[in-house]
Image (cartoon, rainbow over all chains, first blue to last red; front, side, top):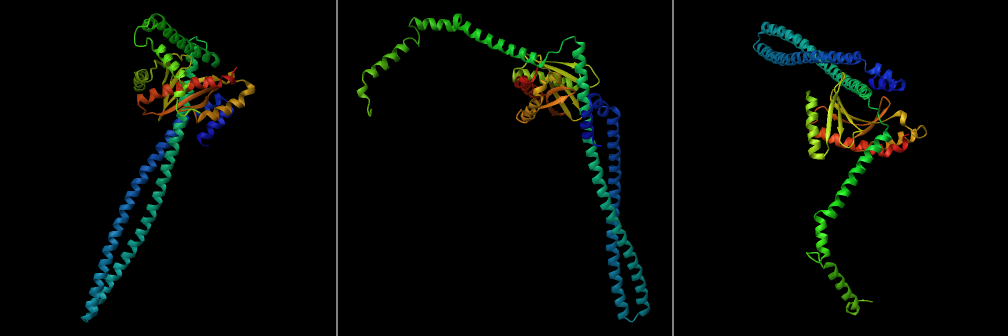
Length: 238
Length: 137
């Protein structure tokens, strides 16, 4: 059963079961062992593969060499026959037969090596997939274990600290209250500044008709009043 | 200090500098390395960080199963599923009866990413609590 299934099944049971099913230290050790085993198989298969590939290359070179030899001796046989050296031609023919036998053997070997290579490559692919699968399972097992243990630690520290755990609603109320307090304090600070701080003096000066802003309101009102008094001057008014 | 803890310390300083968050952290004793991070102003929602194999998992415990209003349970679960993808960088989950928001990072994540995770996760946790309070007792 996959670890995902294990977790789902355990969760359907109870928290205690989840602990036992997944957090079991043996469980992770088994995954770790399986990963180690698969990795070893992988290393072995890779070594075997390079060896077989080397042998295939050697067989290939040998086949080339034998084929060249065969061609060379066939030329010699033709030359011997041309010169009427029948006995020599016969001897060359024997040599060609031997070369042909060896060539067939090497070709057979090369075919077998090629098949081994294909088999080993498939094996490596499977082992790699297995390692990846086990590593994923190990991460899931470790994470579940870690979070479980963390939750245990947290429950324990909450309990031993003597602090009563607040309900979520109470927590929210407190946080909101604190945020409200902060906002209130900032408003109060602004008001205070308005009354007795630097802003207060500015406003006093303004009220007394001193400073940049002094008389601006009156000037605006005067301008609007003047415009209102002369509506006929407005062009294009229906 | 373990390697993870020193990364945590750097992350806390980055969180202060970049996100304006005051982060305090402490290791939680136990067999597995767990760090509790508390963000100033959100002390009720600490974030727990642990690591396993290739990941760092940051968890914020929101509420317990017991707190869910029985008659609104299915609606809550559906709402959690619906919100899971829209919620930036964090996901909902349940751990031994606790509903949590969590984020998973690569074990190789730098302190900068850890700081960003703390900031995002904490905000998501407050928002989630606010949004789902109506389903709770």
